[in-house]
Image (cartoon, rainbow, N blue to C red; front, side, top):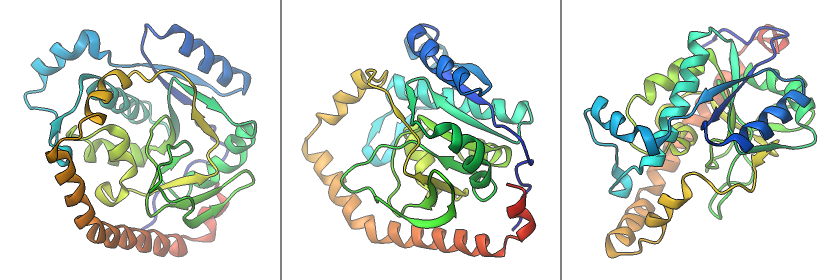
Length: 274
């Protein structure tokens, strides 16, 4: 069950997903990371406004979101493919680990300490560490403790948060995610958070050390079309989701049990590498 741990002393670089036209966001986030002394690289985001026709010619399938009975929007497709590009860079550059940011992130005052002290420890026990998230009324506010840090705890929430604006991933995690995410059939943050589907070691920090800034989301103008859809078919899907909730919960508890067992079987030596 052991996997190769993150190298001692390795400082994960930041990969910033940024549209070329979003200059203000790039300057803001790159400046913040520079001020923290964190190395960063730009990952050019896939701009759906100019690339969607090319994408549809290359990818010979529909981008369908089955559980919502709709197609992904152009912006959701661009966002999904942008995260895939970032994950591929982790693998191609043979990075032991990296942080992946959307360009609308701001940091907590304790982020430097989190980055230096807690993140290496957390990456030693989980291939995905999400330190930003969007809470909803149904979201778990706490979870099963995986690791204790100076600034935060690493937990597995039974009902994880959404959002994919700030997370870290090991190379092994990136490889596994690329395989599991080969088909874009739901928004990227849904696929990342629903660990019971991809079955890759996934955990979140409590509290979060990053959050989305008050920029208008590049997805928002399209997302509202679906958020305002309250027809009978949408109500039926919500009822179906409620009926499936017990089976999903059972699968998540099985995943959590697997994670906790692996955690106990890991050797003290692995812990010391963090």
